[in-house]
Image 1 (cartoon, rainbow, N blue to C red):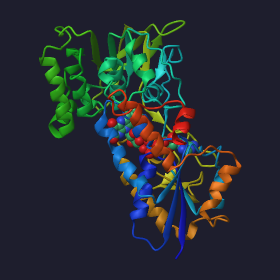
Image 2 (cartoon, protein in one colour):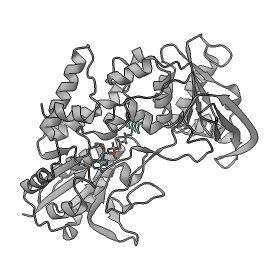
Image 3 (cartoon, rainbow, N blue to C red):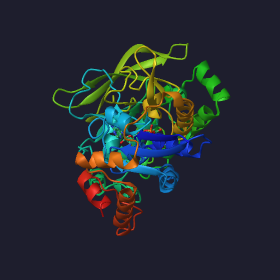
Length: 453
Ligand SMILES: Cc1cc2nc3c(=O)[nH]c(=O)nc-3n(C[C@H](O)[C@H](O)[C@H](O)COP(=O)(O)OP(=O)(O)OC[C@H]3O[C@@H](n4cnc5c(N)ncnc54)[C@H](O)[C@@H]3O)c2cc1C
C-alpha cells in the first residue's frame, strides 16, 4: 500500500480540519501527517483572533484539541516555513504539502493621515489583546475618543474591547499586561464608522446585540441613518439576519439609549452609518477623523453627498479586513493576498497546477468567513489531494525521523504536542491561582520554556 507523507503548514483550524478529514477519509493508502506551526501554540486565529470575551467560540479549541490528541498527527511548533524549513526540504521529506497559513496582517486603507501616530490596524490591536508573542507588549491606550473604521465583526470586536471596562474582561484569558493596559485607558467615546447603511452591515446579529449588554456603556445611534431606502426595506423583508439586525437597532432607537436620552453610563459607543472615510486629521499625531456623508445610489451601493464632517479623536483603528502574507517559493496573488488555487490545488502564473502543493483556509479563499467555513474548505482541498496521487512528490527521505534530524541539525528549537500540552497546563495553573480559567503566556521564550516543562 502506498503511503502519503503529508506536511501541513499552519496549525489554525483550516490545517487541523484538513488533517482530521484526511485521516477519517476512506482511502487506498496509509497517511502520516506532520503539522508545522510557527508559534509554540496551535489554533491560529481561534487563539489569536477570536475575542477573549467570546468563550463559546474559543471553545472550538476543545474540538481542535481532540483532533490533535488522537495521536495521529505530529506537531512541530515554533517552526517557521520559509526560514526553518523550505519548500526543498518539504519535497525531500514529503509527498505533498497543504499550506493553511491564514492571515495576520491588516489590509491597507489608503487615505491621507493613515500613517500618523495614533492610527492603528485592527489586526495589530487584536494581536496585542489576544497576547500574540510577535507583537509589542505595550499598547498606547491614551485616547479619550477613538474612531473605528469598518462595519464587520472585527470592527465590533475592537470597539467592544476598547469600550469595555478592564475588570469585565477579567474572567477571560487575557494576559496580565493587557488587563493592566486596558485598566488605565481613559476612553469615554468610541465611534464606529461604516460607509454603507445599517441594513448593509457585514457584522452578525449576535455581535451587534452584545454591544447593548456592555456594563456601563451606552449605545448611541443616530436617527438620520435610519431613513431606510427601498432596498433596505426589501432586505429586512427577505433576509432573516437583516431583520434581526433591524430589530436590535429599533430597540436602541426606541429605548433609553438613543442619542438624545442616554442612561448616563461613563462610556459611549456610537455607531455612524453612511460615513465614508476621507482623512485622518492631525500634524504630529491623530487629532481627528474626517468623513463624507454618503447615500444609497439605488444600485445597492452608496455615493458621496459632498457633505463632510469631522469628529475629534486621538486614535483611529482601521478594521477594513485582514490580508495574507506571501510564502517562500509559493505563488502569491498580491492583489487578493491569497495563494492562487483551483479548489485548493495551487496554480502558477500560467494557471497550471503546481504539483504537490495545496492550500486551504484563509490563505486559499481570502480572509472572510467563520471557523466553520474552514471545514468545508478543507474537504475540497483534501479531495483534490487524494485524487492527485499521480502528481505527488517522490521524497528521498520519507522516513519519519529524517525531518526531526534536519531540524535538530539546524538548531531549530521546535516544540511538539506534549510541549503544547505542558504550556496549556501551565497557563491553566496560572489562571487557577487567580480563580481564572487561564492566563495566556505571551513572550515566545516563556512559551517555549513552559513547553519544555
Ligand atoms: C479578530 C478576529 C475575530 C474572529 N472571530 C471569529 C468568531 O468569533 N467566530 C468565528 O467563527 N470566526 C471568527 N474569526 C474567523 C476565524 O478566526 C477564521 O475563520 C479562521 O481562524 C481561519 O483559519 P485558518 O486556519 O485559515 O487561519 P489562521 O487561524 O490564521 O491559522 C493560520 C496558522 O498558520 C500559522 N502560520 C502562518 N505563517 C506560517 C509560517 N510561515 N510557518 C508556519 N506557520 C505559519 C499561524 O501562526 C497560524 O497559527 C475571527 C477572525 C478574526 C481575525
